[in-house]
Image 1: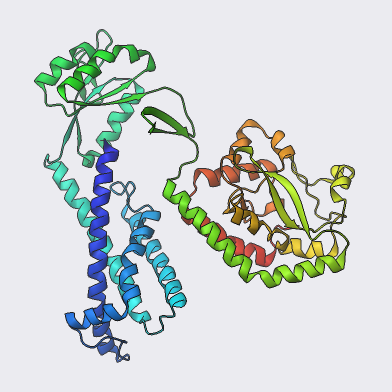
Image 2: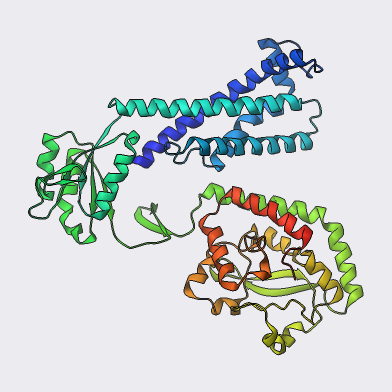
Amino acid sequence: MVKEKEALIARILKTLDAIVIVVSFVLSYFIDNWVRELTGFQDMAYAIAPTLDGFLFFAQKNIILTLTVVPIWLILLNVFGAYIDFRMREFSKELILIIKASVGSVIVLGSIFFIAQMQLTSRLYVGIFTLTTVLSLIIQKRLMIILLNRMHERGFNQVNLLVVGTGKRAQKFIRDLKEHAHWGLRIVGLIDDEHGMYGKEIEGYRVMGRIQDIPFILHRKIIDRVIFIVPRLWLHRLDEVILACEREGIATSISMDLYDLKIARIRQTYFSEFPLLEFETFHANEWELFIKRTIDIICSLIFLILLSPVFLITIVAIKLDSRGPIFFKQIRSGVNGRKFTLYKFRSMEVGAEMKKKQLEKMNEMDGPVFKIKHDPRITRVGRFIRKLSIDELPQLFNVLKGDMSIVGPRPPLPVEVEMYEMWQRRRLSLKPGLTCIWQVSGRNSINFERWMEMDLEYIDNWSIWLDFKLLFKTFFVVMFGYGAS
């Protein structure tokens, strides 16, 4: 109900945003000309005159820029959540969101300029266009919200609700509607099936009757939707009244306390013609996961090419330093316990796994993880490549294969997983990665339980933006070797 209305308004907002971006793109051409005249800057390439014909010539000569600005901005606004809960967002958060999108657009456009070698495209124009778009979007979004609120205040686009239930959840629902009157949802009255409730007021609304009275009330009052917020024990009482609403053409919604879920979210979907209720603990859209996988493939390929000299030097150093294979292979646990072979540069002497039992009393980590700061099994080259995390680079092949992601919880050993507490196993619900919150927060200086909490924190708050932030932090952690051993 609310979701569908928000989705419709979101589509309208996206269309308006596209129009605003196009208008800003045109307007920026004339502002750029004015700024150059005022400051005495040199003329912009392809800017023959501050006229519409001049702009069309400019747009044609900068065709890549012309074709990419709108999709880039809309994708970034969508990624940063511009179209989610937009009517309840504070102005400061709206501003930060648009600024994030503007910074992202500059980075993406800069990358396009570099790849396409667009040396004649004016950087000043891009700066003016970005500022113009930011201001225009802020004004447009504020005006849209004001318009929607005014419409609902005057009774336009109102949805009349009959709420069935007066318990704690029903009262919470009523309070939420009161706090968000701009949603355009109006409660006509309440229904309770218990004796003695008729005529009483709950949260300022009157109980109009029992469940059996609903067909009669539908004829007496203007009702657009009946919402059942009832205990699961009431299910058998709803059959006839839902069928009655169906015959009347009145929409119905049911909210039942099926399970007291703390983390998982409920989603209704279909498998073939079978309706299903899904309880998911990891919340992401398919398009977001597609983008994450695309980024993994592109980044792993780029890093493998750029770091190929480091691979070559490391291979030679390992061979010269000690006998044994170049790569160390180990079985790890991936998504939901799937086993895969993890690759690393060998940083220990041959047979190190056999000596682990003798060193267990020296373990410096709590929980099932084994770590020693000055591990005697580590070779000279191994100590160096561990300090700079070079030993982890072959895992880029795991990322390319799809066993791992660039960002995600570190993949545990199967024997470690067997020792996990029940709540810790949820970290396996997401594809493991090269880096995560734990890697950028001190690594071996953090106890095991806090490490697990950090991984779950990442899973519960995952977004593409969070991945970018962790990648940025990882760069500095690797450069300074913070927490590595």
